[in-house]
Length: 108
Ligand SMILES: [Zn+2]
Image (cartoon, rainbow, N blue to C red; front, side):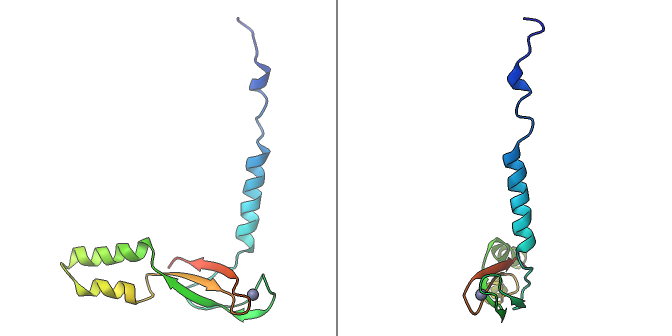
């Protein structure tokens, strides 16, 4: 039928759920402390005390990529093991030394 308009077609142009999730993620990102590869001195958002963060290093995809790149450039290079021994190419997780709360991650 010519001229027939579907009234449901114009409904739903606004999607408040998506807008709210964007606002919520922006607020979370704004309140997360910026962390680096070394311990930092901050006020813990959980317990409120001024602390120096405890840093734990973790291997992740970048660590494995660097090791693989060393092995591929120099065949059977024993230096590839150093990638796992050094903290340089590892992900750093920061925790509060008082309440053990997770504070943030640095990806190196
Ligand atoms: Zn704390």
